[in-house]
Image (cartoon, rainbow, N blue to C red):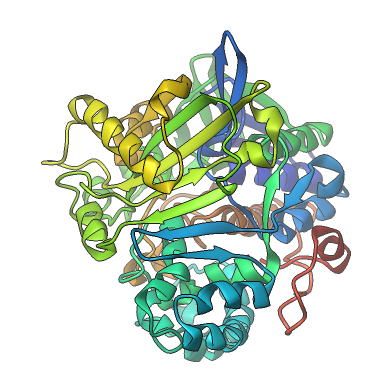
Length: 528
């Protein structure tokens, strides 16, 4: 019997669900409001007389590929055959304003040598930190792989065993103090909390595993950017029978009583036995789901939700190459704590911002025309709120400030070299990509919004409505979103009687063995 399933949004979670559910036997239709797939992981293209520039729109670090490799394998396909993933020897340079640098690498002796220039004692503690994080990641696995539908799920034996290592009421920075005395070193192992849009002084200590995962499993660049991965996922889903209706925004989810029975677009109503929501959770709830069908996540609850930060973005096509700049560079302001406070209160953009630069053409020169480069510049700022800055007024001034600060990171004379430019502000994220208040990392990952307190994979307020993306359990970040899509797809397949969708394959590479390449992880299986 045919079981039609509608997926709203062709971002990473929606694409993973489309693959898994098509392979499980569902008749999948994906609705995407834009003309191309990928959502915040799509390719941004800049057309100039010099040629075409290609940028990652959002994520630029491809981490932990074994989760997606596992999903491809479950669908009888190979990620390696679909996308070329280039492992970076130097993960990134971390520049501390006026106070040294760390060159990050999975070559641990090389990493220790770099850290020792700041603190020899801290460098000596890196192996112990990695060993502790290895145990923490193994303990976290059942949390990441399974749904949390109620408080009772917190009492499962494997979750209770994990609590001792997860230290849920300590912050990332507090946890790192057990290993590292120098605050710069702690920043080098904690700035990754920004992947979740949070401060390391507030982010739960569990997320020290983010830095560990980089060192244990490496950082990759997909040739062609993250958009190439999204297109490969869409191609795989199409080959299994999924249909894509791009340029066709969903106007509402259609309900009969409490059950989702389809979606309505400008072309009419498409009936479905289940609906998967991959649109930004808070925007989708307020725009697409009537309040009567979301008792827990009503408008008042949504208004009280704690949000992640936003970003101010510069996508620059420039003349020439910048060979002295790493593929990834993180520049941390001298008063990092004050900068984070400015981001959190959101009243004004930080006057001395931290920022991140992707200089992808040192690895993938085809992203730009010959003798040109792409520069992607990300500055954390507060999400949109009452009393916050008017970005229509603020953006030109802030652009000049950011360009001035780029010179400190090794990008001088940038203004004269720009041949293409696009700016994204919190307002643009909201208006162009429908990101609620421009909070690009979705709901904050605090203790009150994790596990069973985060929106559930099988949406708790309506039948046959399932959630994927950073706004649901387990949370944000591409590997986590892919795993969340697997959880939601597994639940949907069980409910509709489709072919079963398995959990992750046996864990590999977290037992003290050195980090390995993707080819070995595909052979050995994946981890969520």
